[in-house]
Amino acid sequence: MATIIDVAKLAGVSTATVSRVINDTGKVRPVTHKKVMKAVNELNFSPNVSAQILQSKQSKTIGMVFPDASSLYFSEIIRGICNYVNQFGFQIIIGSAHDEEEEVKTVSRFLNGHTVGGLVIMAPSSQNDDLFTLPINHGTPVVYISVPPVKAGTTSVVLDNFKMSVEMTNHLIRLGHRNIGFINGSPHNYDSKRRYAGYLKALQENGIEVNSDFTVDGNFTEDSGYRTCLKLCELTSRPTAIFAANDAMAIGAIEAVKDSGLRVPEDIAIVGFDDISTSQYITPALTTVRVPLFNLGQVVGKTLLQKIETNYENHIAVTERIVIPLKIIIRESCGSQIKQ
Image (cartoon, rainbow, N blue to C red; front, side):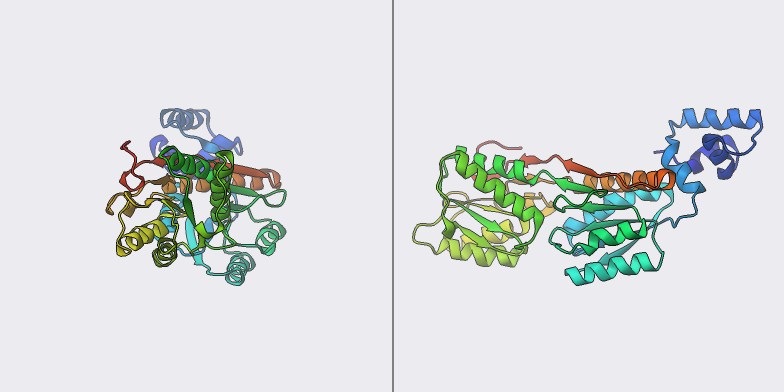
């Protein structure tokens, strides 16, 4: 993707001159104007975001708040965001917050220090209104990831969790399973709630009675998947399939089934959600829902820069909710004969 710097180099002028041409501000000689527009066309340059950012006085730093920036799941999203915004000269500051109090403190620090021109906040477990009101009160553009429908004037990017959980549960039902367990994530996590709701919806639509003994609570870690799955394996009438709300717990569950003297998928089928890189390499390889983490990050980065541009031009907040489509990846752990 071409940047305003690329246009300036090709035209043999300064970036300030390119900015004056594409924004029609200030005097530029006709021959120079022609050279700039020729470079714009040759490079297929989209000037809106770059030009507005270049001429603004706002900070070209983006603050990002994530529950755990070091995890593979979050790091791929961050990589996608960086890949997009770096093209426009933006740098990032990452704040890792492990609870709501830390989230609010981190956001406040970014805003009160006037260090950021925009914010990305991933807070799937947050119930604190301050995370939504603080950026609005400071007039700072912000994009949220994995949050429930929020206040007017906010923009969020979410996963199609509910639909894909319905589809995954239906896949297990088509394979002949009616005793299907579910390993939940953190109790207040929005993604986990939607995945569990999809699981329940599929059972209901297929006339399968919900067995409360088949639902256990983990915390998105392999250890919690292992421990909770051991409990399911110990039931007198155990599930024949288990749907874990993320891949880490599904991987832990596979090991728990093996350590219980059972087989995956012959005795208990296991499926997950996310398609982290290790899912295809474990034995058996994990059936899961693929979340395009890097692409999600790019969507977030692009959306934030568009909000920054809108904020510069109109000083208004636009309510928007972007849903990322997902895909089921069939592998050996569910017992299906279909391979992908």
